[in-house]
Image (cartoon, one colour):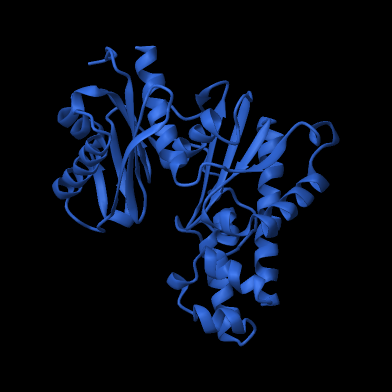
Amino acid sequence: MGSKKKKEYWAGFDLGGTKMLCVVFDKDFQAVGRSRRKTKGHEGMSAGLKRINENIHDAIEDAGLEPDDICGIGIGCPGPLDFEQGVIREAPNLGWENIPIKESIEDEFGCPAVIANDVDAGLFGEYQFGAAQDVRCAFGIFPGTGIGGACVYEGKLFRGTNTSCMEIGHIPLITGGPLDGAGNAGSLESVASRLAIAGNAAQSAYRGQAPHLMENAGTDISQIRSGALANSVKAGDQAVAAIVEQAAEQLGLAVVTVVHLLAPDVIVFGGGLIEAMSSQILPIVEEVASQRILPSLKNEFSIVEATLGDDAAVMGAAALARQSVDQD
């Protein structure tokens, strides 16, 4: 099952919180077919795995190929994973537990499948094809509902023996601060994620301090997405601008921690919040980091914005599949 076909095609699949995306790439990693579907929360395991396989089939068909043409499939998955068993241990947004996704895909398509954390896959895509090419060590920080972290070191993902790591969103910053999604007080996620920013912005709107946000998105946190925050700041809601600035300062402190631990060549910021507000966030991150990092490390790294957008995770997942097959 590990042998490469005469025609070399790879598939990358990203199981996001609201969508699933599959892209088929040729040997030069040019996209030749794709398929996108919305995810359905809390559907059963069998139905969920069937939808995943159907999405991959659709992308292969869109490329004008047959399943036998695919050399390997990489899967970017949310939540904690069991690499040895190829299982998603838990995907809370989908209501899934212990999902044998690797086995399901290999049985369906007859080629090797490789699973990876979705943030790991996204950074690996940026390392191979985007903002972090040709470096020894790259670190990724992706603020969203939480804050994902990832590291590529000398061409390999940095991870535990049987699970992903680099959970930078859960590093503690503030004693007795607000709780994050895992119940940890004062973590980076609790004060600097897009969800944390939206929650504070909703309070400002309710108090009458953010009239533009109130008019366009109200106080429903689920409606205060990255675009709404960006538009609020552009329209002159100073209270929201201050909230974003405070979050950026905390992200800058996280960069200080990363640089002192790993001395990465590049730190990649990505995700919808960064895409919408990079000019409001990244300069503050850089300023805070420069003030706190040891002088010997100040000029040894750069902070950059991700460049691949939604394709980062699928490109990274497919590249991980190729790397795994080439090593067999």
